[in-house]
Image (cartoon, rainbow over all chains, first blue to last red; front, side, top):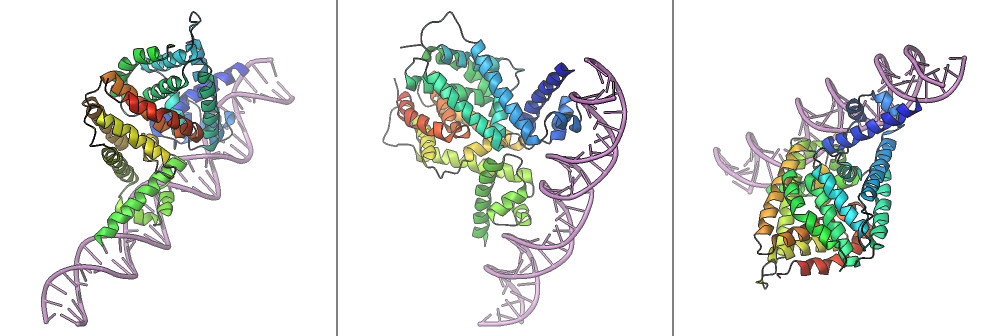
Length: 180
Length: 180
DNA sequence: CCGTACCGACCATTTGGTCGGTACGGCCAG
DNA sequence: CTGGCCGTACCGACCAAATGGTCGGTACGG
């Protein structure tokens, strides 16, 4: 069952994100395994080492977010700023779904793992160039991206404030991401 | 030597922040102790428990940042937005000093500790009300605060990008924090 | 009958925390 | 001034529990 392998890996990914967000970067792989419904040995069968697990999760989250943003592209729009607006919509929609898997937050916590830091950094550079190539005023792009990132990180401080800020900022960010 | 006590506690605080940023929230208190130049027992003499240490560090960082912002208040300014502009200047100045103690980042990593989360959350609420009482358009206030927070968190992803963004954003954030 | 998914038992190491002790500065009695 | 004494800062040795990872095994689909 090669297909079942991929399924199990995905379950472990989700369990890892949940466990890291709940318990911090120091979570025991045993805890993650229990969360995922496999034994520690089962987990170690798929990922030979703790570090390997975290790196795989990182890639998965990063790729997932990128796909998520691309899925929020509105092909009907032809004016500049399409990608930036999709970025904003992706983050806001994820934030609105209460039951989201907070992959974003997990990566922040895992940053001390060396492999993870490298992957995150490379991904950030890619976002920087992709968003800059969007045809908008560069300062405006950075402003909106940073505010969106700040919004995405807000639940780490307070769920309640995050909800209030989300309602306020969504329209403002989208209009700031319009040309002119 | 009551004064020496306070000195030692401060040294331990700084070592904790450094160690947490370097190794994640799972750092051993033994590692922190070595970093601070005391024995594990010495550390546990000042903070009876790991959790107590982290909570004390949290309060210290939070209070330090608040004092830092207040120190950046420009008393010559009488127009609205004084506090928000001080907030922006405080974050930007800290970011410019390479050798800063990244207390901000440490708190993000420690969020899984329950006591820490509560302290951070309460502090966030306080900032929300303080900044809102600043006489500026509320949406504008939130925009600037979120973008500033996003900027402060950027070094976690990439030091290099953070430097580029800082140069771009400092004047823009300050002008956005002006009335009208 | 082989390869892959997965398990339980096991192990060396590390961890948070306890305990008994030492060194020393200050303070009061003589 | 001084000697004894107490409280505080700090230490090393120690311990039970937890941890990351190994190893030999089982079950089973192809």
